[in-house]
Length: 366
Length: 242
Image (cartoon, rainbow over all chains, first blue to last red; front, top):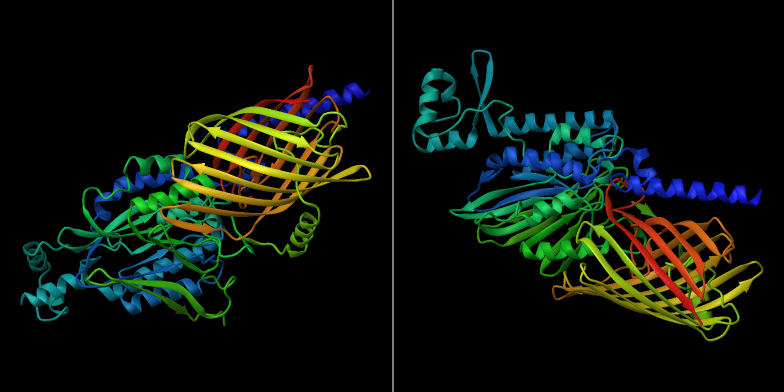
């Protein structure tokens, strides 16, 4: 009887071992399978395809003269009320920041929550277009002229106000734009400057499918031209699983995120999982030790000016290895119910100096 | 993110460790840690190999020596070299055993140095743990303080909660055993909320030898999103007592 029991137990252990061996190929735990997460390698494969397809568009995403700024938010955990997300976009528009970055956990992996998010982003894009573009009608089609282009035409004496193009024959507008190498845009052509990375709450329960439907990618970079031949570089990394994963690390080592021979003034990196834990009470997952040291070295190799993290919902500002590391509070009402300084604005001055300031969010559910 | 209030447990562990000194044996071994009354010396050698996303394939040997000074007090030293990881580790550990009924309680202290040559990183780790060991199971809790230095900077992490559990199919003193483990540390590293889990076995051999092994999976990140593997590894070794 005892022998039979031992045999059964041994068989059970063998089955468990076999299961562990097979599951170790991809999904590494029954828990992981049950919650239906995507692996970072799968997401990075998708992201890199998008990255390669859109690289030319992302390079020189914008040219700036003098100073410019961008704002960063994190861990919005949107459910049914997009109030804080709407507010972030309003702050961005009101201040005239160049772009927004979001450090992940943008919504909480239910389809309806991502629909709430998508509506918020779409509304934000409409407001952005209304502020920075002038609409023209080609019969039934809405086309847009960038205000910055119209400002150039005014400076050149071609028109005296934005409204002048409305009274011009459409063909004459096209001729004028061609002469100045300017474009007309459809709404789809206009890139809403909201740059997120994926967080761990964005990847369970098929969250990646929802996230990527809206944002397409989570591993990418772009540059901002700040002077002739001089750029600021922005690198976005997928660390939602607490690792960059083999494919992303290979891509990094192969130089995907290198400076491509351009002269880089500042490099900023954005990813979800934090490196530094603010206290022993903040028991959030971080990177495995060897990967943590790899990332710190890589940030130094890139001459990173500021590295941004989220995940732990606790503000932390520290210098390590010549890099400033900022870990942001959660901008979610669930985690930060009171009004507070949950966003960060970085202003890049013309002389290369930076100003980092916290930005207050006031939205509280009525 | 999880916030865990654990002051009570930490306090108990710290007090116990301060009061009684030092710890349990290597995590590769799932046999009886208690002094058997005859052999005062244990030497263990094993080879580990695996693959992780930073280094790819790696392998290297480790050696541990344990001395039972009395049936209750013991001390241990160990070293490991991982060739492909370019990692070198050494630690010293002390342990006090408190038998209580059918259980043994171990209180341990450990100081470890790791050199990660690839990333030019020096890491110092101090751990205090308490281990509750039954016939078929063991549970470990503790606190770990980790300091690392690289790129001309140094950082001491906030205290890291250390936890481990193992469940074996046979009684601990049986001639062979096999079981599962789940913990956020191994012989030569301590992690934060990054757990590792796997299967371990041991079998007594002639000439006071024991064969043991371990299959270990380290997912990236925490329990809530384990779909990405950081490292898979195995260990196979022999223990000799005299």
